[in-house]
Length: 208
Image 1 (tube, one colour):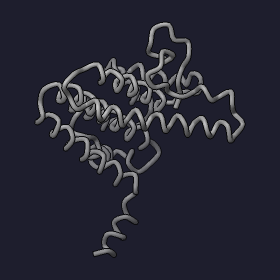
Image 2 (cartoon, helix red, strand yellow):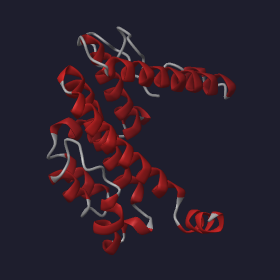
Image 3 (cartoon, rainbow, N blue to C red):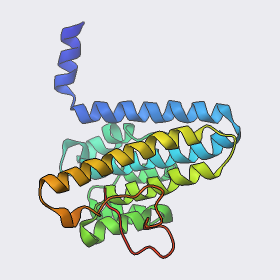
Image 4 (cartoon, rainbow, N blue to C red):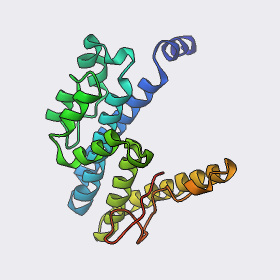
């Protein structure tokens, strides 16, 4: 009943509930696109694998300093939050379940070239860029490439996700104006821009 649901919500942190829902959503979505087959399964499947990996990395990173990072809970509660899909699954996620601090997390990600560069951005802290900033840049690049294919449904997903990034950009610009930090306005992740950091000849770096 409603009181039992209320008790569950009080006993379980909302972030754990959120991570569990995202995990199941990614896994079900991955099964669905795989069943569709064709170009959709290839492009959309890769987007979801990367989304799953991002989720697993963030869950691990955000667990440091919380009960989820206690040795007894790493292989039980925390590991259960990792999606059973992705480039890191299953070997990488098994290793993530054992890490206890950022240094150990970095050593695991160094084994996966597609994530070692992102981790290096976080570790270096250059220009104040966080790991989320690096993930956003990588996501926009992949979402833009989804439009290069033909006869698939991944472009619809990419369109929505790129619109979400545009909203993040507008929020960032608005906050900079309100806080009179106009010198920070340019630090967002451009969408379909020749000034994007992954395009040749770019000398600007996005942030939000």
